[in-house]
Amino acid sequence: DVKVTQSSRYLVKRTGEKVFLECVQDMDHENMFWYRQDPGLGLRLIYFSYDVKMKEKGDIPEGYSVSREKKERFSLILESASTNQTSMYLCASRSTVSGNTIYFGEGSWLTVV
Amino acid sequence: AQSVTQLDSQVPVFEEAPVELRCNYSSSVSVYLFWYVQYPNQGLQLLLKYLSGSTLVESINGFEAEFNKSQTSFHLRKPSVHISDTAEYFCAVGLTGGFKTIFGAGTRLFVKA
Image (tube, each protein chain N blue to C red):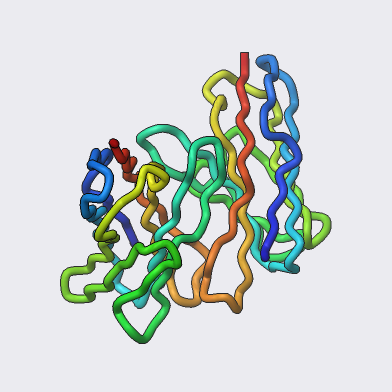
């Protein structure tokens, strides 16, 4: 089974702090994604990476950056956390040969106070 | 551009009753279609998917969905629901050969005893 692991399930950070959300997948998938999930808005794509050191902006990249130095790891960075970034963050990965099926991690609940 | 519309934000239903969660999509190119389920405080899990071939696809826990190309729909059905089916369900569309997968806003299924 594919396993996508997000390092932190619950975080509380202060406004202005730099926040790192880490994600690791164990299936050698080329593509990795960061989404945020908010009630009534569904999932919105922040950034995705189609291979190592490659990244593309999603629909809501403002206030975020990403890093993918190794194939299995995709990090989301909040340069200066703000209260409107309080949300559930979901990491996901996908193989380019599996019919575009996306596999998700358990999610990271971030509260910015 | 592609879009996904889940027509019901919440669906309350009694245990052992049938249920249908509706999903419509728009796309000018061929798509893959997915249903994901999210139980409380967890990430999304793949429930079933349509890639090609038979338009009726089934999951291991009794859900099924039918791809209707003329109506651009992919409704999810179950003939008899259980309390344990209470969750949020997301319909998603992926382009064949593309990177992005578009998610609907979700439908919260609430099964009552």
